[in-house]
Amino acid sequence: MNDINREFVSHDEALARAEAGVAKLAATRNDRWYPKFHIASNGGWINDPNGLCYYRGRWHVYYQLHPYSTQWGSCHWGHVSSDDMITWKREPIAFAPSLEADRDGVFSGSAVTGDDGRLWVFYTGHRWANGVDDADDNLEVQCAAVSDDGVHFEKLGVIIDNPKGFRHFRDPKVWKQDGMWYMVFGMSTADARGEVLLYSSENMRIWHFEQVLFRHPNPGVYMLECPDFFPVTDKDGNEKWVIGFSAMGSKPSGFMNRNANNAGYMIGTWEPGGQFTPETEFRLWDCGHNFYAPQSFNTVAGDTDDNTDGRQIMYGWYSPFVQPIPLDDEGWCGQLTLPREVFLGEDGDIHTVPAAEMAGLREDSTDLGVVEVKSGTETVVAENAEAMEIEMTIDLKNTTADRAGIKVHATPDGSYTYVAYDDQIGGIVLDRQANAFGDRGYRVAPLTADELAADQLTLRIYVDRGSVEVYVNDGHQTMSSYSYAADGPRAVKLVAESGDLTVASLTLHNLKSIGLE
Image (cartoon, rainbow, N blue to C red; front, side, top):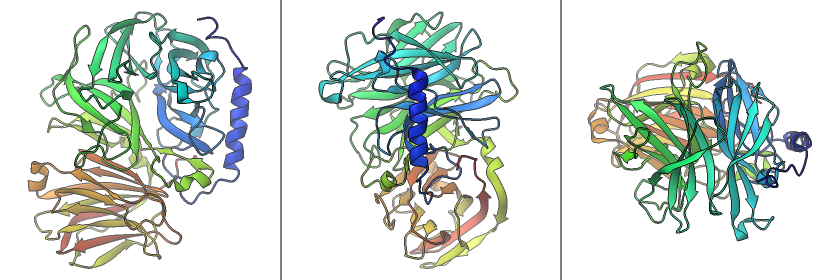
């Protein structure tokens, strides 16, 4: 264990080199799609959100970062913080590979306020078995680090060794309950089955295996990345538990699992010492093209500040893995979703809505009221929307269109992304068939029978420079997709096909920058 905790390079030196790498890429960054109100690195590649927490009066978001190119590589932790979850500040890179244990990557993990008042980070130390690539498998262990300010960290080294040299053994999520610390992380077994393991500790340093909390029933799912586990309360006050994971190896089926790997959840019951009992099937967190590896945290964790009100806040990663990836040549690649509040709706299912703070991004608003769009026509409602929130309610009783909705990023060359209610499919379609850049295709967020029978359908659509984020019916479904707008003004248009569209209410909000540009 001592050898694995040996420092092969000064952490300060590794961090300085990484900062220089990001700065070099940022100096030539192309901002045509760089987000105005989503978190992204100044330069380089990012993936999973990590270490989400509220600590000493500030919100902290860390993320997987490769500081030397716009492709995935040796993972570091980038870092931004905020005192209001609206305006963000870039912090120094928090972690770089420096120990033998994390020589080839400081992989994903979580953060909590410890019993000593310090911020504790738990992450996976990653090494290539052959020192070069994954041809001879990985070596992964769980590590810890501590901080007094959430910015500068002391690495403590390995706290949980890989018990049998399993190839996939990563992504710790830690929380405290009833005086005991718990940790879940994902593993791929010797027979290539995805599992979530549960460990416990009294002091955060010595950890004990409790049980296999969940084993995926599908033998084709070989790894459960970025597991999450947290309680929610139903409408009758009963506690339920949500287990979330990103399933590697799941196969497409209908509208489900259309992406390379798919992040979702199951609702069930659990109490310490017992088994997790699922009560639902696997459901997607997000039905878009580019959502993966979400992480959540509870805002009461370790703090008594007025801002800590007990919400479960989640960020996800806009994963751009399907080729072609236009961001490869932009100096940056990857962004996070908006922060989302996770709760159990009256319908008994999980809802995710933009955090309440997101209303603070609004600079000005235009209320267009009721809008009628005749069959086969388009109505321009904004000439150029670079950063906009659209609140839209469709009157289902008086809408006769087969398909109707809103085109965003509609540029003079005929490119656009279309968010539409499709009456034949019975769902919301996010269609990128007319995109000029990148992968096209469409995704569907299916509606329930009750939603289809309702009088109204509500949409909240966030349009950033290179992405679209859609919330359906108070967040019962969400969709996150890249949308690489072509040159010129980016119009917003209402559209009706094979019938008329009646919009009961439409409000447009221009959004300000979160300060990371």
